[in-house]
Image (cartoon, rainbow, N blue to C red; front, side, top):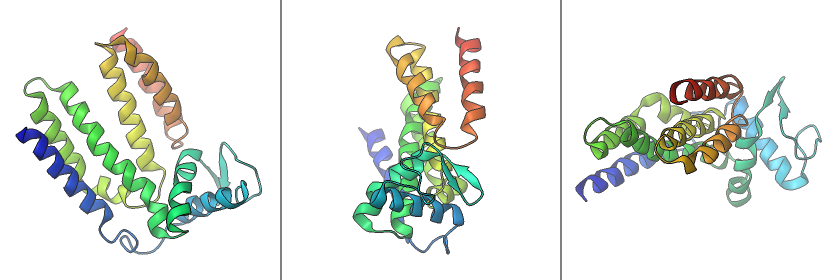
Length: 199
């Protein structure tokens, strides 16, 4: 029971680091954030992106293309909180908090000794790592990519012992391809690695 209390304490720390003055820190509004927020707002109100394309799978934006998951997941927050920095960044905050919880289970799964202690240490490092805090506070696609990728890894690890996890692992890996451009390279590498190592 004591270790579960530590996990709650770690999650409270993670919430504080990710929500404190979310609208004003970091200062300014990155163009990628603005693009995600505006496209989510446009889909919410018209069903079309900034170029008038109805419900696209990939969003053309500012000279490149954005993956859809961050935009579509931001829509409910813009509906309830309006189009602003807070609502646009909230998707990343929730992804960052989910990452802390997922990393707890990854730590337990990879543990060679006390699995709960290993999970707590991994969760604490994830909750307090400066670059993860930063990316959890800005409305980029990257944080969603991290949490979906790590969740896929966790399910593949679980599938070593419980075959029922293999289908969800592949489904989540496929969804990860729609979170961030780098996933199109790294997810196939992950799957090939899993097949080679755990065949």
